Each structure stands twice: as C-alpha cells, then as structure tokens.
Amino acid sequence: MNEPLTSPSPSHIPAAGPHTPLDELLALLDLEPIEEDIFRGRTGRAVLVPRVFGGQVAAQALVAAGRTVPADRPPHSLHSYFLRPGDPAVPIVYTVDRIRDGGSFTTRRVVAVQHGQPIFHLSASFQRHEEGLEHQEAMPAAPAPETLPTAAETLRRYAPLLGGPGVVDRILDARSAVDLRYADEPPFGSVGEPREPKSQVWFRTNGKLADDPLLHICLATYVSDMTLLDSVLLAHGRGGWAVGDVVGASLDHAMWFHRPFRADEWLLYDQESPTSQGGRGLARGRIFTESGQLAVSVIQEGVIRIPRPGR
Image 1 (tube, rainbow, N blue to C red):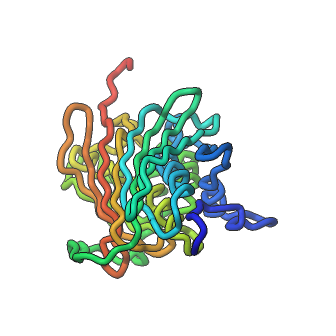
Image 2 (tube, rainbow, N blue to C red):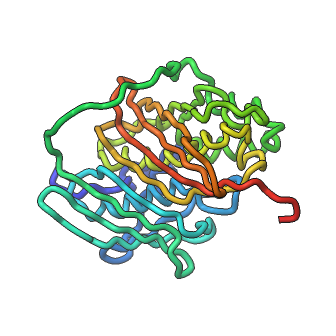
C-alpha cells in the first residue's frame, strides 16, 4: 500500500439496500474533508446523557490524524483530554496539526471543535514497523466468549432497574454495531454489593471489516470508552449512570497499540481500577486477542460523583 491510511469510506457502505448497524458506524467514522487537514464529523445519537459518546469523538479524531500519515505508519499511542461535553445536535470539526514527520515516528495533534470552542484534544504518535525486544504479560483467565450471554440477554434481565424495556432498547440500539459480552455481572447487576474492582468483557464488531489497520485501531478506540470506568463502580457497589446512582464523564484517555489485531475478531478487554478519590476514578485496561496476544493497553480517568439532592 502506497496510499495514506484512510478512515472508513463510502466504499465500505452498500450503495443500495438496507444498511447494517456496522455500516452506520463506519459511515459515522468517515469524516468529510473541508480543507487541508480540516475534517467534519457527524455526531451519533445521545442515549442516556445529552452528549456525544466519548469513544466516538476519540475514534473520529484518530481517523482525522491517520488521514495525514503514510500507510506504513500505524498509530502506536494516543493521549487525549475531554474538555467539554459534545453537542449531539451539531457536527464536530477536527483540525490536524502536523507536529513532526521523522525517520521512524510521526506525531499529530488534533483539536475537535463545536460552537467555536474545543471539546476534545488528542495527540497521536505513529511508527514505521521495526524489529525489537519482545515480551508481554500473560493473558488472564476468562470464559470463552461464545459461552457468555449476549448484551441483549444481560441488559434485559435488568430492564426494571435500568428504566424499563425502552431504555434497554435504546442502549442496545446505540451499541448494535458491536457484539459486547460481559464475563461477569456488570455494575448494575450488583448494586449495593461492593466487590473487587475488576471486570472483563469480550467484544468484536457485528460484521467483517476491510483490512485497513487504522480502521481496526479506530474501532477498538471507539469501544474502549464503553465499559472501562465500570471497574471503579464495582469497588463501591454503584450501578452507574445507567441507574442514576452516580454522575460522571471521561476526563482523559490514553492508549498504546502494541501488536496487530482485528476488531472483527474476539478481543478480551480486561479492566481494573487501582484507585478513586477527589471525585475522580482511575481505570486501566488490557485488550488481548483470543490467541493471547496483548494488543492494546488503556488508561482512563473520569469524573465520578454521587448525586446530591436538589442538584
């Protein structure tokens, strides 16, 4: 490949006939070029809170950065801050700064803007493949994904707690491009019962993807923001934003991409929280391929507050 890496393009979407949820997600990640190094992205539907899903903003920003980088340099890390809630009613404009193009590494900075104000800031580094020292942590034990209930089966068990079947249907609709399965009970399944702040989910896209490495990395970035802070809630027996016993939002998000992987094949997302304090919770995750390769490391801090009466 001699062309630059690109985000999902209209060629991934059927020209006619019904579109799948994955087609719709790929179209959401297909940014519109406005000017050199400036792109516009559509926003998805708000589900439980009136803001754009953070994983979408992070994935779109990485798409924008990747469109300015040669194809032989996939991203190896990103560091980002969520600055303001995204407005789901208007598009997001992404501006890319070409910070550095070196012999082995390329650095890009992306600012996402709505209503004239930055809502998200990302720095991403890309690297040409090199041989080097190799080692990794062992993959933790986890049940096989095919043995686990689907997200629909898990969430519908807790429909009364989550606000009824209509709310569950909206959550499932928003996540329908991804097959995500909880290895154990999610936070809303053990409200009032603090337990070890560790959780696992398996995920893959609901459909096959093209071979573009950037596409798979951007989709993993999208999913990585869905469940990571759950481990913070488990330590305190809180059900989370879905049941309203905490309010919160992502503050920052960092990822390191270690080895090639496919987002349309099963990936184990192993998550834990080492600490929470000061209205913030820290969580870290490791994403493994089904064969045991450590593909991605993730760290995120989020605002997590207990709602106060009258506020």
